[in-house]
Structure formats: structure tokens, C-alpha cells
Amino acid sequence: MNISLVSLDRFNWELYINVSLSEAQKNFMPSILHSLAQAYFEKLTPLGINVDNAPVGFAMYGIFSGIAWINRFMIDQDFQSKGIGKIALGLLIERLKKEPQCQEIRTSYAKNNTNAALLFAAMGFQEINHTLAEEIVAVYKP
Image (cartoon, rainbow, N blue to C red; front, side, top):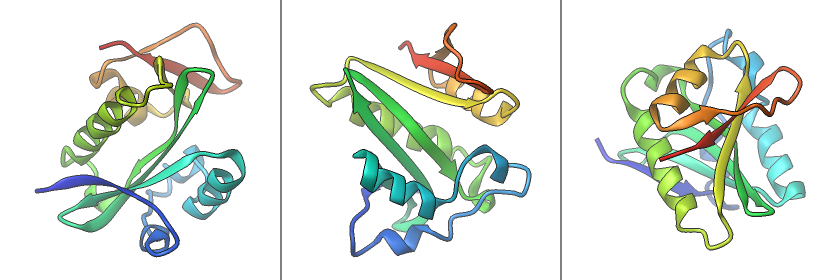
């Protein structure tokens, strides 16, 4: 299984808009189309997540004042619980660590999103005392 991150552009973005979450997970983040519009207007970087060159996920990040924020991270419902998310998140962390302006990596997720909490904790993120309304903020601590 070859897992990779792919930069999205005008030629491939449509391959990723059908990546879907379960009904229970859909409340945790906006659609990929919404995310792509947000990426354009807020100078964020959208990425596709592939397994053997087939689209199975989506991620997005932005770097602001030295902090890289992972704004989106999702694996299609049919590909979850196979270790893909953990490997893809590891690839994203390594990518962010190479960005010269990145001094810290953070993410946020809904307080009741236990799957996200478990995944990010398993990858070295620790919750910090900085909350955003109904969200938990976590910082990467290798």
C-alpha cells in the first residue's frame, strides 16, 4: 500500500470532492468544496491523500505567524481503520517540519470527535489550554 500526499491544482481537484465521511462524522467539518474555496481565499494549502494513486482523503493546512495549522484532515469512510490516516498524518507532519516558517504544528477538532482526538494523540499531539468555542486545540510535541 503506497500512501502519498498530492498537491491539488486545477487539473486534479475534482478527483477529491467525492471523498466522504460517515453521517456521524459530517458534522465535524465542512465539505471539500467549501474547504477548497476557503483555501483559495485564506491562502491555505489543500492536499489530496492517495493510496496507490487513488484518492482516499483530503488535508489542508496554513502557516500563520510561525504556527502551521492543520485545518482539515479526513479519510474516506470506506478507507478508515486501515492505518491510512496515521501514515498520511505522519507524512503531513514531516512536510510541515520542513517548512522554514513553521515553528510549531497545531490542529483543532470538535470536543466530541473522539476518532480525531485518538488519531492526533497517537501521532504526538497534546491538548493545550487554548480552546476555540466547541473545539479542542492540540499542539504537536514529538
